[in-house]
Image (cartoon, rainbow, N blue to C red):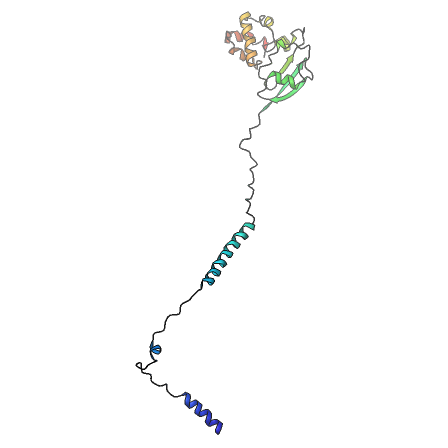
Length: 224
C-alpha cells in the first residue's frame, strides 16, 4: 500500500494545473515574447568548403569528359556509279592488208584514224608506199585498208568482175570512165581523201560536177 500510494501521489501531482502567470510579473516578458524564426547561419569556413566542393565537381566533370574519345562519324558508302564516268565508245572492225607488220582485222574506237589502224596492225614496213594512203582520214566499220609497197601496180583499182573501185582507183584509171575527165577525177580523189572510202556508188552525187545523168552512166562500171 505504501508503494501504491506513493505512485498515486506522483501521478496526482503531475495532474495539477499549471499556475496562472501574470504578464505584469517580473521575468515573464520572455515567456510571452513572439518566437523568432530559425535562421541558418553559415560561417566563412563552411562557405569556402562549399565553394571548393562545387569547383571539384565541375573540374572532375570536365576531366572525365576529356577522357571520353569523340564519336567518329560513320563512313558514307560510296555510290558504285560514278557521275564523272564517261560512256564507252563504240568500236569498229577494220581489215588492214599490205605492207604492215601483222596484217589482219583490228578492233579500234569508232573515232580512230587510218594511222591508228596501221599501228594496231604492227605499223607500216620500210618498203610501204604511204603516199597513196591518207593516214588522217577516219575509219569506218568493215572497211579494208590497203598499204601498198613501193613499185606495186594499182591492181586494187579494179574491183570484182573488172569494175573500177571508186575508193582505190588512181586518177588515170578514173579518167577511163565515161564523162570523167581530169578535173572530175581529181575531185573524186579529193572527196575520198577528205571523207574516207566510198560506201556506195550513189556517194558520187556528193562530188561536185557529177549529177544523176553521169551517175546513171557509171552505175554498171564502178563499185564503191
